[in-house]
Length: 89
Image (spheres, rainbow, N blue to C red):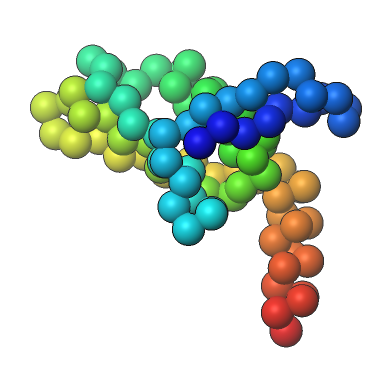
């Protein structure tokens, strides 16, 4: 699923994440020996670019399936979530 990356309103590239569930949950799949900071940074970047709040990171190459949840805590996501809640009320 491609998503446009913008910086100060200017398109600077695109991201390609693995899955988007119900238009809200980004899922990234990995098969690496261990998850490193670069994997988390990549997913945080996806969250900000897509303006989504929650994501899951799966690693299938660990002895036991490894699942990590990341939450976007940036104000633009929180503000848009609050607007959605207010409209629904």
